[in-house]
Length: 220
Length: 220
DNA sequence: TTATAAACAGACCGGTTGTCCTGTTTTGTC
DNA sequence: GACAAAACAGGACAACCGGTCTGTTTATAA
Image (cartoon, rainbow over all chains, first blue to last red; front, side, top):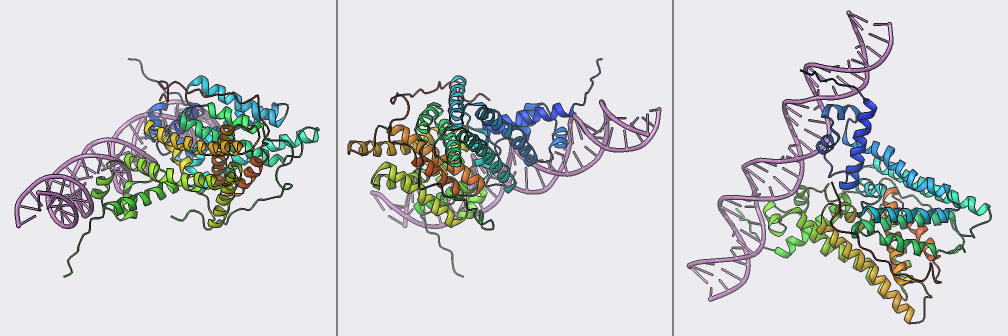
């Protein structure tokens, strides 16, 4: 009789769990993904899962910090930084994502946005991490545009405003694309975004950043 | 002994359940809201709940169709239609929502967007209704802008593009505001949106509306 | 080898979930 | 008042969920 051998592979097993969890959270969401399903899909026993991720929350936190953040980095930040200008980078990413969605035939939405909606009110630890990723995303675009401006290009438009507008438009367009299962709205929003003029917008870039009081958050 | 009397009030009971469900779905989401919690909060027994809403899905569907759609109608469509122009209406709604959020001290997000993220991939019936509400929202803005154009105002910008951009920007800004619990990003996005020039954007309003094939949606 | 801890297996449990089912009461109609 | 249907009460239940627990195997280092 062939005796079965076991090979310990902590990193590999951890990676497999994260792969499955990332995919399931994206497709079904956090609450709709049961640990049982994840264990079955990853081919992992309860003991192993609990060894690497003591709680479901810990697993989700790892997915957000390691996978979702990386996805934003790869599909947004790096391409924008590599582009000639921030504006051109944003345009390129919009088109690339739209093309990819049209090819694959369905829209699962932005992983960051998906999890942000489900978790940012549920748990403050989740919320903080998700907000940080959003902030980093915006700042990368804004910084890039500031470089553009010192290089002579881009008129008086405020980089932070443009970055916020780009990220908001993308997130919102993906929401609609997900609901309608039609990536066309991404292109529609892009062409609208392209008509944002380099000339200054409202009354001279006033700083507005008021954080809301913390103690009154989310009364049940 | 005072004998307890019961008064049948179908509409009232149904309304109370919808009130509680709408609030809980908004604050905690669909999956995180248990029927037990809803029953307790509404002061309704299981039998009564089941009588009006046979399943949880039926309840959520009613919330979406009757409450979420009405919320979009009241806070967006009606103010935009009542405004002098579509552009001005969009601006006014952005500011009104931002002011309201700052006053109440926390951000629960856009009810349509919240439920759209959680449910549009889970069930096609949900998805269809949510997509319909999104479409009606966009069309109202676009129609208003078309009226503006025949009245002489607004240059060559495509109304459908502007409407898509406005809704996407709002949805995305609300997502970020929810994650950061800071309504300031709404104002930031608005000022970016205001610098969308009335002059034509890309290459002359081409029609783009390709719906994705239906049979390949969401492979598990 | 031997000890020691990490990695993994798998059963188990209390609590919760959504739904169903059987009654009872109210309401409207003739 | 008789009667049927709607409105409501409340318990039952099977499935499932996330977490824990005990035990075994593998790797590591002395």
